[in-house]
Amino acid sequence: MLDIAKRIKLINALLEQDTEQSLTYAALECRLTLEYLCYERFKLYLSYLSQNDLKNWQPKHIIKQISDQIDDHVSKEFSISISTEKINGRSPETREEFESIEYTPLGTQSELKFNRLHSLWNGVSNVALHIPVPSISSGNIDIYGEKGRIRKKVVDVISFLSDINGNLLIGGSFGEEYSFNCSSCKTKLKRPVKSLLDKTVLSCINPECKESYVIQKNKNDGFEVIRNIIKFSCSGCDENLEVPIRYFQDLRFNQTLNIKCAKCDMLSEVIMRPLMKSTKMR
Figure 1 (cartoon, rainbow, N blue to C red):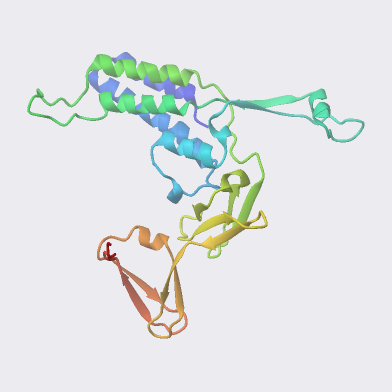
Figure 2: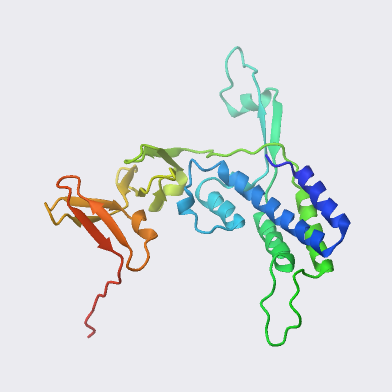
């Protein structure tokens, strides 16, 4: 878990130097710290969400996607306590019994206000970490931004960081989960049931695996898992060739994907090119 007090001390030391260079470095340390706060929470959910399914790489959007698809506790404040007390020699069973026993606090996860974090993340970047593209009306090009503006943004980040004082992070789903094993690499894939009410596409969390799946509810209120593939017919033996869709996602124009038939060893080439479809208009 990130030592926020240590990060604040480092940033304050750069502020005290009060040069254009030190303030710029302070802004960079702020941005890196804000990114770390988001990514360390994302890391706790790697068993649920593949990097390939991230809709946006920016820290705020990663946390929001986890909150929407996996667990909204990722950004909330809550405390964890434990107890070994018994009720007449047995474990508590009712809510009243659970509330009647003594607990020992383990710690608290701080709230992570990701909208505010995103605003600060953008703010320090805009004033210190980019050189504006010159225009016909702009003056000289400066390596560093204006000191006063940088200092204000850095101080705002320090204030934000100072309010984060939790001593633990908890990752995972608090409700019922649905899980299955990847058909190719056998990695266990799982999602909270509440996030699967609509048709969902998820990728295997194994970074070496290209499989992805469509999950949808069936008529018996269970779930149907369908491999996300494209089928081809082998020109040598008419065998069905099933290729995970993710193999095609990174192909560029005119790039070739080689597919070898396991039955007859025929090598087929799939070339990424535009396909034209004509529709007669009335």
